[in-house]
Length: 261
Image (cartoon, rainbow, N blue to C red; front, side, top):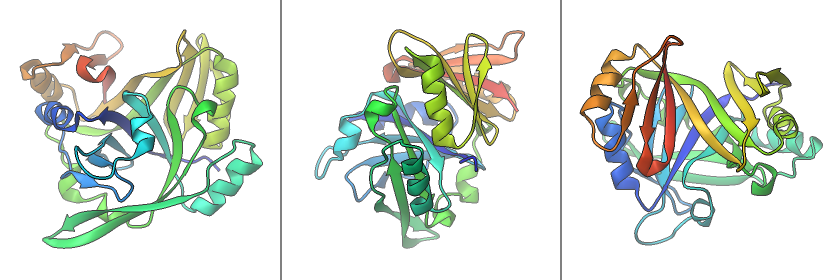
């Protein structure tokens, strides 16, 4: 069974405040800052089926080593699991050498009441996917993530289209991503494509392994273009004949391809 996309991660390391300000200026609605029990902080930009996460470490207190050891910028591809133990067994059977499941949580305020958003994850070894972290997340409290008040973005953000992965061995890595997603790789242009519940993972040749671009969908591009052209620290390129606009944030080494849904 194909595992759908759950979220994509941008690692801000110790620069969370500046990163959050940029995304807010671009018209994304960010959730209040969360603090994980593992020692990381985050903001989410939630779409109906998945979300974009800014992750980092706090300036004081416990700091999550996994985040500190991870690449800066676009660095995490996370699939959703309905049963993390079953996912762990599937990955073991596929010889992907998963780490043991980990449970963690973060406080969240819902309608003025303190709640606890809880998760269980399984992560693949970093060396297996050198472009960035690949892992699986089971939401034990999804009602504390997918909230109507967090789904309405002034810029019209409503989902994901694709992620591009640079690889020294596109065919071999395409098969690994397919195995992780429970899907099958297909030749695509000069690289390989893996489809996971409508989300595309495009593995292309590159000198250094990394996630190179993220495709986002919007309810139209006019609102986003207005925010981008008024914001500082970003570069906006209007959509061409292919309908794809480009939004770059140099301070996060991040390129986003923006399409109208």
